[in-house]
Image (cartoon, rainbow, N blue to C red; front, side, top):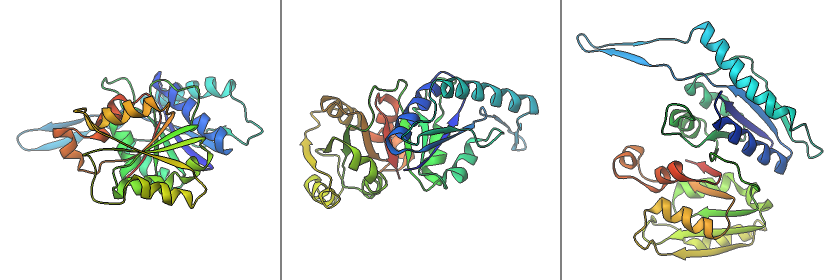
Amino acid sequence: MKSILLPVEHHASSDSALAVAWQAAQAFGATVSAIALRPVHYQVVGAEPIVAVTFPPSEQEDTEALAGAKSRFDAFAKTHPAEQSGAVLDWPIGSPIDDNQIASISRVYDVTVVGRPATSGDGPRMTTLESALFDGGRPILVAPPTAGATFGKKVVISWNQSTESARTVAFGIELLKQAEQVTVLTIEGVTVPGPNGQAMCDYLSHHGINAAELTVPSNGRKPGLAILEEADKLGCDLLLKGAYTQSRIRQMILGGATSQILASTTVPVFMAN
């Protein structure tokens, strides 16, 4: 993991994303490439006839978005100079990008760091996360509102036996190799047909990773909250989680582990789909 993409906006949540991206960069001697993210632009839809009009960003809005994001980046970079580990903070692109541009840019980075989506309008957006997750072809790292003191020391794999979980583990294998403790966590009753947690531990052993298997009952808890609670008991500072085993629409209506984790996590979450 040598190249990290970091969209930056001018709000406080960007500070946590910067911190988590830097923690990952320190672990791997990586370069964090930061880029300004445009604010969302609304579409006005008329009823008769049906006409949709999107208002493009003005030059002034782009200038303000760039200046605000760059000021946050510069303040962080000033106190986090390049290290002997090889970790570097960089600002390679000089103009803001939209959410839908994140996907194409992220395809040439090992991981994209995004903030945990906010429920208010002033914070990270779900559209930013989903653009990188579904169209980038690479994993994402979701930063919680506050960065922890450590990163990647005690890793929990949320294992529900799915294709998405398997792909996430494959993307995160280098993270797992550097961890001091790895736990393969399964919540009973929220799995799909596939290899169990012990089979995943056996797979990881071939990569020199000594992982422990843990299966626990849900005890009536929502799946995502059960995962976070069990991870917290293990002292987890990084969670690996496959994204959206069931459809996003179904999760929006009925809820699901991924949606619950994205709403509540206080630790970084490494995800792939």
